[in-house]
Image (cartoon, rainbow, N blue to C red; front, side):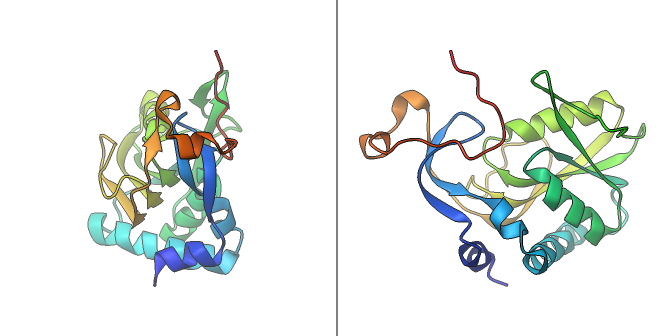
Length: 194
């Protein structure tokens, strides 16, 4: 399966000037929600990712799947379905990830974190902290896309279907050709403005 072609067919690779959830700027945005809106495509992609995770860690390496809201919820659910595991998600409350809706991580549970896209890893690290605070043991993370050209920004193993390099820029270092395009923020994390 050509993963990049799946994203292109879903028109999920956007070009322009974007402010990422991390606060960094980029000329490319991977809109995984567009990829996952087609249940057949979501099934194909998550099946391939689940096979990759299983090949690396084995069939019985995890007890539960945890995803950060908002971007990880759909892919987390579909990955849990593929792996025959329960799926829960953490979400922001007063600016911090927490479990709501009666969700909890059993003490000692072996956790697989699922994300749609990993760039800086900030949401992933916050999710790891949220799981650890409940006594869970995070074993690994899986994502559809790693935007770091194969580098892992996390303190745990990361398995991704698509590894690409997309340049990012600090707000005070945006190149002029990008700065001349109005910036949009398509992600779900609220950015603080000073």
